[in-house]
Structure formats: C-alpha cells, structure tokens
Image 1 (tube, rainbow, N blue to C red):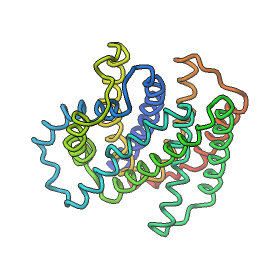
Image 2 (image 1 turned 135 degrees about the vertical axis):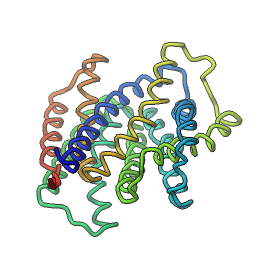
Image 3 (image 1 turned 180 degrees about the vertical axis):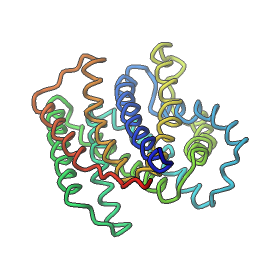
Image 4 (image 1 turned 90 degrees about the vertical axis):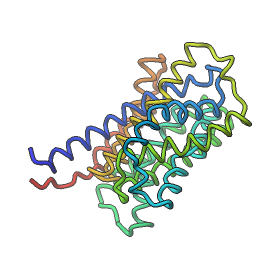
Length: 296
C-alpha cells in the first residue's frame, strides 16, 4: 500500500475514532451534573490532568519551535477555557442530545460556510444536498428533544453552537497550518493549563472537595485525558490527511452515536421522530463525505 493510500486510511480511521470518543463524551458529560462538580472543575480536570502527561512530552519535543507567537495565541484561545466553558455550560440548560446536534451535527454546515467565506471554495451539489439533509435532521432532533426540555433550552443550544464555531475554526487551522501532534498538545493543553489553573484555584467556585469518589473519577479520567489529548490528536491527523470538510461530515455521526449509546448505557428511549431524523442525518453524512483521490 502506498504512503498516500495509507495516510487516507488512517485519516478516515482517526475520524471515526473521534465519533466514538465524542459519543461517549456526551454520555459522560450528561451525568456530570450529578457529580457535584462545577463547570469550572470540569475545565480544571480537562487542562490540569492532561498537562501532567503533556508537560514532559513538550519539554522533550519542544513543539513551540515550529510555531509563531501569533499561532500559539490563536490556537490556545480557540482550544481554551472560553470554548470549553461554553460547552459545559450548555449542559446546564439543554439536554445532552442537543450537544451532539448543535456541536457535531451542524459542523458540516459550518465547514461549508467557512470554506465559502474564508477560502472562496464552493461546495459540490452532493455536499449541498447532504448538508441540507443534515440540517433537516438537526431541526427535527432539536424539536423532538425540546418537548421534554425546559424553556431555557435555547440558551444551551446557543452555547453549544458557539462551541461548534470554535471547534470548526480549530479544524481549519489544523489543516491549513499543518499542525503536528505535539503542537496541538502544547497549545491546547499546556498553555491553557498555565493560564487557567491559577485562576481556578484562586477565584472560581469548586465542588471538588465534596464530590463522590466514583463520579469524580469518571469525570477525572474521561474529561482529563480522553478529549483533550486523544480526541484533539485524532482531529488533527484526520484534518491533515482527509481534509477539514471530510472530517466535519464524519463528525456529524456523533448525534446518532450519542443517541445509541444513551439508549444502551443510560436506558434512554428514542421517539419515532428522532429515529427518522437520525436516518436522515446518516444519509446526509454518507452523501456529503467527499473522498479525495488517492495517488499511488
């Protein structure tokens, strides 16, 4: 197998691994409110624990040598506490199903808009049709979930959508700047830990001292290591090898994955409109993924 073909295979594999990672993350974040931890604690776990692994690696590899100060500042902000606090706060207002819909299900549409506005690249007809199907499914899923949610669910939806804008910008930069794994870890984890952790310790409210051991360990392990290390590296590799557009469309499978895991793990039931919407979303996903030609 040629190196080009191999990189495409690993790129698609990484993208589908992200689907699994983020689907489980929806489940873990769904039960975070029952752990006694504040959103500020969850962000502290995300940056603080990940930095325990990231700092020694960055000292060894010195990834900052290949980055300009502007790149470090922009990437650190996009992956920083502002982004993650928007996301965690969204779960305080809206159901977790909305998180998958608005953070991942709409990524393809955001990717198309960014491509048109920033790079003057027009989508293909198949991508437009697929994107419209994804949009329809997202609307149906949001409406169906709103039946049992509070009147303030729209606040969570706005927070989730804002998080999706941050994340889409990250994927674009990962592709355009050809960011390496250690550069992602340095900006996304080490820089943000150095800035956020002192602020959290000195000024932000925390429920960590009273949190039950079991729920605390679940959040610590998953929030601390999986999304901010494994997830970001998979996203960077997928964006570099198969492109931001393909990665975004594959990530649109996260709402379906989260719904299936919610049914299997948490015993949640899917209404008929949700099942139909997930089928439509999957069809839009398969139609929208544009495979790049592999040069042997």
